[in-house]
Length: 209
Image (tube, rainbow, N blue to C red; front, side, top):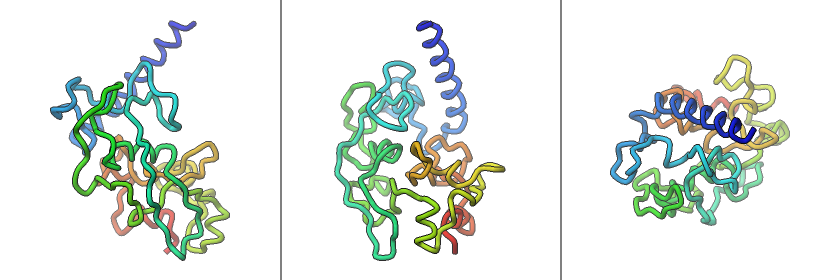
């Protein structure tokens, strides 16, 4: 049973890797040919088929070092959501994009190559869209300018609502980095967006403007 289970997981990982490779190639997350990636593998800097980390949530077979930073959060007098430190998949994103963890810190090694430029957000997130907030029907009602995520179609599938397709966590209510950005570039949109933002289409998926 154990051998059969491991074989199944390996097959699943290979299939996911093949699918991801078809979209990742040539994208901002195509790391396979960069000098610091001595493995030459496109998935390995983030995922591993064996011995993945079990300490992070929303981290399938995770292979990268995690950030331990404390972040300064976005705040606004008009925001009805409650802010907290980044969690879940957003913490995975920030494990490169906060500039404190090297891109090549994976597989148990400590790297020296860091994200630079505009995609290095540092630990000051005061000028960035809030993440790791609970986006619920109650929040939409309290805010008055958000669509109800439980009844509003996401546009990412034919029948899925925002909470089905764009929110995370066990309750499907957490707005995270991956609510707007697809790290695997499945849709081939600029900026690794989950959908086109032409005419602000991505923004007004959630914002009732």
